Structure formats: C-alpha cells, structure tokens
Amino acid sequence: MFSQHPDPSDPLSELVRLLRPDAAFANIISGKGDWAVRYTEYGLPSFCIMLEGSCLLSVDGEDPITISAGDFILLPATPAFSLSSFTPAPPVHLDPNKVGHAELRYGEQDGAPDMRSLGGAFIFDCAEPALLVSLLPSVVHVRGSARLSRLVAMVGEESADQQPGNAFMLSRLAEMLLVEAMRSATVADAPAGLLRGLGDARLAPALTHMHANIGHAWTVEQLAKIAALSRSGFFERFTRLVGKAPMDYLLAWRMQIAKDLLRASQLAVSEIAERIGYGSTSAFSAAFSRHTGRSPSQYARAVSAPALRNEPAAARSQRRH
Image 1: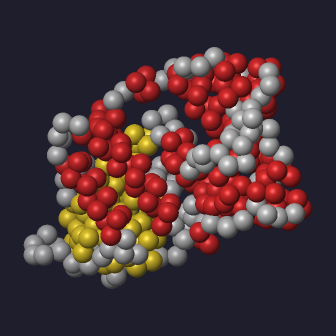
Image 2: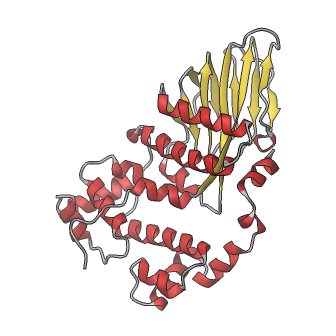
Image 3: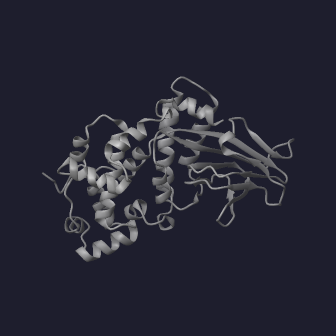
C-alpha cells in the first residue's frame, strides 16, 4: 500500500545512476603569451577547472566568457569550442578523442604560464548522456567552488597515476563530479526539467515522492495534494517548470528505468513491468514499444550486443587517447 510518508529517494542520485558514469579523465592545459586552441565537437559531457590565471572560452553558439582561477565549466554536450588568450592568435586544432594525459602547453614554451587549467571528459557505461543535456544549460559556469576544485584535482591525479583501484576511484569521482556540478548549476539558467522542478519548493516534494514510488498508480490529484496546490495550479506549474505534463513525465522516467533494467538483463519483462507500475506485461510492452519504437525484448538484445558493454573502463579510456 502506498504511504504518504515514504523513505524518499533522491531524484538527482537516481539521475546519476541512470547516466551510469563509468570514469572520468583529465589533463593539464597551460598557455603563455598569445595562444589559442580549437577543439572539435565531442558530443559527450566534458569539464574544465581553472587552476591559475584566466583565459577566454568560446563555445560555438554561445557568447565568449572569461574564466578565471577557481572557475568550473561543464559542457553537457561539448560542441566545438576554443580556449585562448585575450589577444587573438592562430588556433591549434585538436580532436578531444585523441588528447592524452600529458600537459599541453600553448603559446610561449618557456617561463611560468599565464594560465593553467585541468580539463577532461566523462566515459559512460551504456548510458544515455542525452538525459544530462536535457536538464542543463549548454554551458554551466560555476565560480569559485572549492569542492569541485578538489574533485577535479583528484580526477587529474587518478588519470596520471595508474594505482590499484584506479577504475573504481575514477567511476566514483565521475559520479560525484556530476552531482556537484548539477547542484552548483544556477536553477534559473537550467532549461525546463528535473533541476528546475527540484528548485521549486512546491514541486520538489511531489517529484521526490514520485521518484520514491515510481510504480505507484499516481494521479495528478495525489501529486497536487503533496505540492499543496490545486489540481489545475499544480498541472500548470509542473508542465511549465519540468517541461512535461505530470503523467508524461512519470511515463518518461518509468521508461528510463525500464531501459536500465533491460540493459542489466537480470529481471524478466514481467518483473520489470510490475516494478514500474504496469498491471500486465502486455500493457508494459505496448507502452515501451510506443515510447522507444522497439519491444522490450528487441531493446534488450540491441543493448547487450555491443562488445563495448563488457570492456573495462580503463581500456575504453586508453582507446580514446
């Protein structure tokens, strides 16, 4: 029976679990004098933290911004971008998939650099990083976060030193980096989605209850009562801030959980259907097919086929470089 006071799950933690970050890697970039480096589109989340000095970040489609020591940047989809000094210089072109772990120095090679940054990217294990892109602005700029600085520094150390337990550490650090970055993102700058909803005092309890009891037969009236709003007021507010009507949002999250369980291949389709709130396997299969274009069994076969699924994170990291 549904309780009005469940042990609430944390929607942000659930999001990171569904993203399944497997590792993160990072390397030092430094520059002196007049310099510029141009990165091609990467498509997956990447990050940068300024260690010393300042430089100009120009992300395609966005206004250039100055980033200074202590600033953290997260690019959820990493389009093509440039880092440079404030005086124009011919750019060095780089493919982010082929960047190694050694420090990269631009401009004048001798003397102390004007700027040093630690930049890197995430590796995902059969995840859907588009989830992250849908929740955040295209550029997340956090100023002066000591916690993010420490986490990125640890990623750099683990990336450089292949110590026992390295894969485990990089996986956990990737999770912590994503959570901290999402916590630090200005909610007002985020697009309609989970972060905007969690930043709203009325919607946050309803979202938390929904995530804690994803298999419950929710109604808009029940959720509106938790939010202490009228049905119409809740529906309008939820749709505006979260970007989907309440029941559409619930369906989308049920399908994400179902896809995650199908990837794991540990439960029968009937068990997955029951877990996410469907009274019959046929009803779940029909809903899943409408949502994804494939039946649950077809989806499970498709995601279990790639050999990359079983490739260790360390090997994937090395192959990227």
